[in-house]
Length: 337
Image 1 (cartoon, helix red, strand yellow):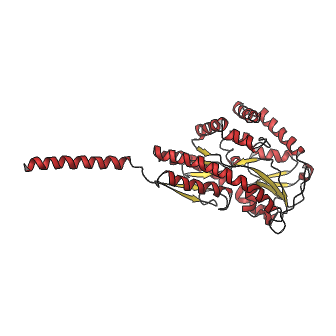
Image 2: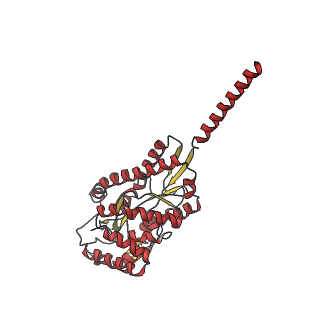
Image 3: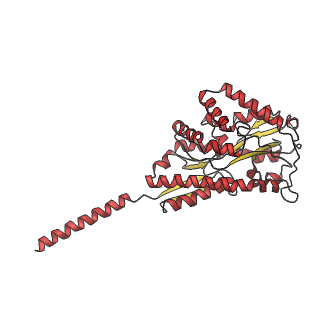
């Protein structure tokens, strides 16, 4: 009787042990994700990163811990994409033009005045064109594009003179990112573009190495460029977006439920980013150009010559680039109809 009872207890214990082991193996491992960006904590990047952190931790039931690192703590923006390809950085937010050296097709979105309106931009990025682009980027680089987020405009500022027309750009030393489309565009505007990495830009502006530059509207405020640059122009010559990217290494650490949580969080954070920043742009421009606040001077200006110059740059790139680039540009233009 004793051995019969003991045998039954041993069998029951074994079943419980196997059940517990199965539950443990089914339970997701905790994962820490380091998410970096190069701008100030108060920048538009921070809006996207903080919302993604909040939603990812919520949707993963706490199995993912997102640690947000601002201000180039992980890596500079110029180095971030390559670092994700190598797997040394988990996630990073990068402005599109800084991705072009690693995936040249991005330049189609960098072209001057390529989007006719914000509705046009979001129709492209949030629709089939954006999905196909993300797929091609991953296929070529193994980096995941999780969300495009907010689409803004690069506004212009300088220390030499107000911009009333394109003639006022002549010979102006303008800092530009190391992106050929942007260099060619400012040459077409008549300026003297000087390519500099983002990290060197504040010093170059302060020392007069360059006389002007452009940034997303919110960056001009968050970086306090209004303290050293007296003239502001809402040129809107380049649209920009700052996607959230992830390395294949970090995505490979996630189980299926965690991947779903990350993708859901990224999508919703992108919508939040778009809605939040869209509401803020008019307020930021008002701050920058109001006496007693940003104090920058702005004047009415004629944009027609700038738009015509931008169209010449678009047409030149369409003629010179390969079939994939031409097809993407055609799809972007067609979406405006």
